[in-house]
Each structure stands twice: as structure tokens, then as C-alpha cells.
Image (tube, rainbow, N blue to C red; front, side):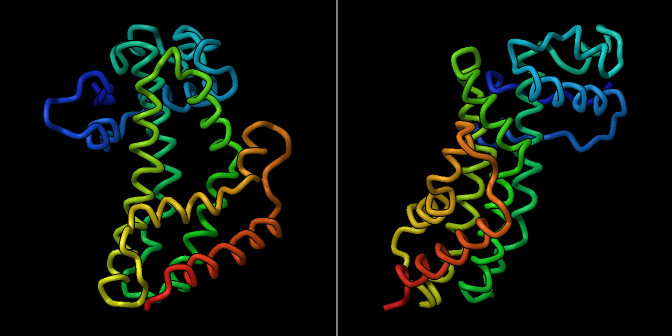
Length: 224
């Protein structure tokens, strides 16, 4: 039997939500993986309310008893899908922030990857689904934040703290600075994409955002 994703409601006392909600299974299990692939497609296409466990079992395809062997209920499966996709997007950013690199050499690739990630069609669909289902599944928003934006902010904050200590930059509040950096990259364009007012940014538009934000951010936190 494959491992089961850790549901948000089963957190152990004293362990931060980010550590429990973001726990993932490393054991390869073909049936569990097939369920995850089918569930991801259906949740993103139909949303949480429009997707049934029966439809997921049929799409996998697996029997319903097999489905419930791996996932307790639809909430459990939905949480596993969201966390898996969130972590997959975040994995693309890991390894970019080499603390030995000068700010321009580290922040530019990070900004490029972040812009690419948040304007990915699947990422936009996932974000919309989490927002739409918050009343039905309020703890999912916290789990999504802990496993995605919070981790990204912490990675950047650690880099900025190191640059501050080495006097390459003046960043007295690395956490706030990291949040500002990502907010500047999102800008108004991401909101319009989320609302369907426009499509994802073109490559030229993405490059223009990076070219604007990175120098402004570095100058704003230049070492005194």
C-alpha cells in the first residue's frame, strides 16, 4: 500500500503547519501516481465541487476500493494534489539562490523563473481553484501558502540576510524585503491574468518586468 498524504487536520501538536502539510511521499506507487494524475486533471478542469471520487477512479483507472486505500476522502486527495503541484512549481526555483553570487547574478534568474512560474497556465488554474474553494476547504489556503509562497519568501529572505551580513546589501528586514520583491514581480499583470482580463504575459513582457524590478530592488537595498 502506498503512503498517504498528510491531511492538514492531522497535524501533530507543536509541529508547524508548513512542515506537516508539505510532507510528500517519495515511494513510487503506480496506482497512486495514476490517481494523482487523473485527479489533478479533473480538479483543474472541473474544480473541487465538480469532481467526484467516482470520476477520478474511472479516469485513473482504478477501483473505488483502491482509490480509498490511498486517499481517505476527496478532501484528502484534493489537498495532496494542491501540495504536489505547489511543490513542483517551487522546485523549479530551488538552487537558484547561491549565497556566493552577487545580487544581480542571483536575483535576475530567480525573478525570471518566478515570472515564468506564476504565469504558467496550470499554476493560474490551481490558484483560481484554491481561491474558489476556500469556503468549502478553508485550511487548504494555509497549506497552499505554507508550501508555496512562504517557502519561496523564506529562501529569498535567507539569501538577503546573507548579503546583508556580508554588507553587499542593506536589508534590515529580509522577510519584508523578500515579500516586496515577489510583489513587485507580480504587479498588476498577474491580477489581470487571474481575473481572465488578459492572457499570460508574453516572453517580451516577462523580460521587461524583470529588467525593471531587479535593478530597482537592488538599488533600493544597496549597501550604505
